[in-house]
Image (cartoon, rainbow, N blue to C red):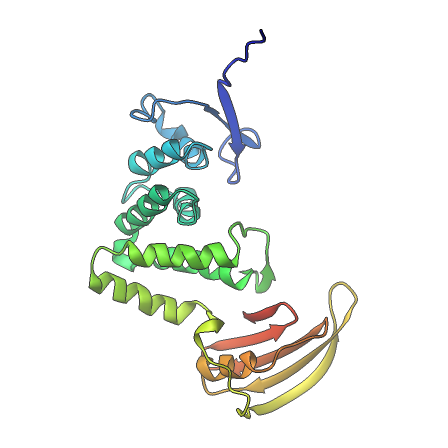
Length: 248
């Protein structure tokens, strides 16, 4: 009879460069009651981030409960907690929401909202240009993560503050009904060469606010590659291409 040895360690990606290599080595079956016993202060963030990505949901849950703390949580720890808002395990999702509120209650979780905003719109802005390099969740999980965060609010006032931030920062086109009768101020229609050498067409309009822009864009689907409808508003510029609606 062939005997199989239990795996003693596992590796998870080190996305933040917290150690000497590209991976964080972790015990495959750690003591979930004492995850961070004996961990040096200089290694704590690396181990928190690692355990938050552990394949065992019981370990991820313990890492949330024992790891990031108000006043000491690092950027890497917060970003990993945001990912856990979209965890497959409901207990982990709920714990992540509660932890983020503990850490960011004074700002109504604004940092979390901005991270999820970028996931929903499909890019971050790096040096003034869109980038997808740091995205990890995707639109649908990020939208679900926002709902988890709302449900985790400690009281009605906190939930209202969070909802106001979401309304201000997050583009959710499905919340605005299309208006095919809407006529916007035309600005220009130009053709430009993209960084890949393709010829793209940009058709630009001006609207009074975001709601009007979304009502227009929802009513005008784009069916051609490299064709962009863009609507300027005092709240920012919103656009639509063959993939859907985006903001800039």
